[in-house]
Length: 163
Image (cartoon, rainbow, N blue to C red; front, side, top):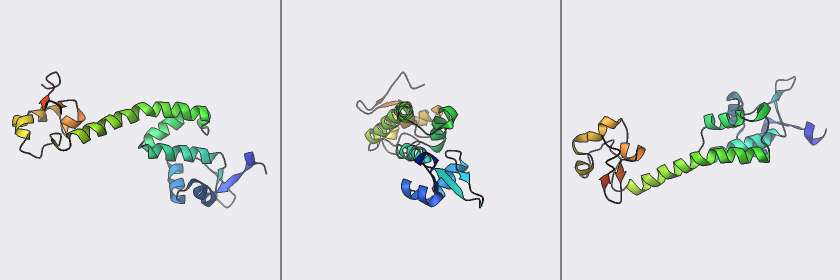
């Protein structure tokens, strides 16, 4: 049997990837990976599936959802195992999402000590930033953190963003 024809049991694949066998079964039910079945109905993973599993784990470590990962993997021709070029394309695609998440986290860190983003828990300063709860008209949740309504440097709202 050549390396091209090599198949691993679920335990071997899990061990090689450093994850639980239940994670492999879960990935398979979500259509992220595939296996073949033996006559005894046992899963066997082609050795090339290790790379696909590794891409999934790397993407999860970046904070991507399984839906985002599935969408990216589905963009591969014939749903194949990612090559180096595929990984470069996928990682470039994910860079924008990661940059947006980083910006949200930085904004949260900056505003954390001064404002809860007006969701609102009636902190004393909210009388200044959100008098009469006027930000409620923008929607539910921490609007100052979701939208660019507040400038932490000046302590003022951006007048172009507020009704």
